[in-house]
Image (cartoon, rainbow, N blue to C red; front, side, top):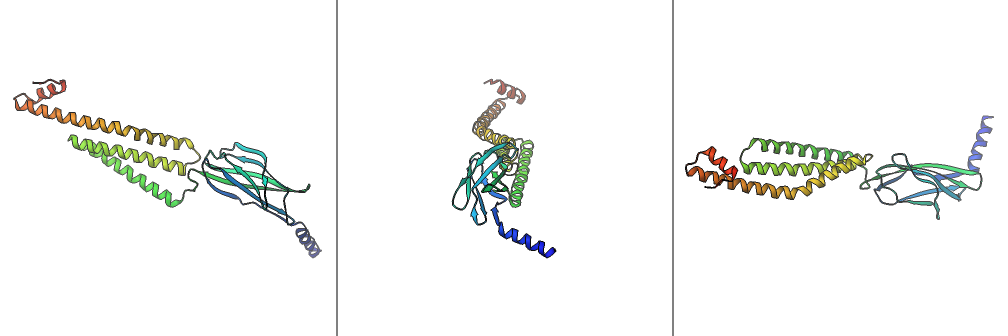
Length: 245
């Protein structure tokens, strides 16, 4: 009896041979680029009649595409999705039909990243190491800025600390868009911090140079007054007030 039942099951499988290939992942694509979704479906050696997408879901669960028919081509079905605005995983659900009584569902997904690549552990270690080194260098420049009193040293360490801030903000932006793709706000935040620091660099640099020149001229003026016999405190006050002798 068991043998007879097994033979019947094998016969049924051979009679209704269904091949509806669905790759669990359509791949990884770059943000804001069109994504070509391909579906292969053959039933009893013949290509399916229709393949429909019941839904394509954004990473946050909202529906991007609803009940859309895929284009039938020789050998597969195709749909081009061009709304890859958000980073993350997009779930794809659909079904293919053959005749009026055979229906084969499929489920797949694709992922969208800023550069079309998934972050790897080696990249993560590289960025973490770079951030640690930049932070250490930043704190070292701050320590130098506090420790040294000479204006030339303060100008040097102040400029270096600002450059470190630019590098840190850039690295944080790159890390956020590669590893925190589900929260676009974080990437945008570090991006604008980086842009603001970069734009402000030129006026701040020119202002620092102007301050340094003014400081040198003030020191020279104080020294001239001291050489003329004016006490140091009075010479300093006169220099602050712009008093000239």
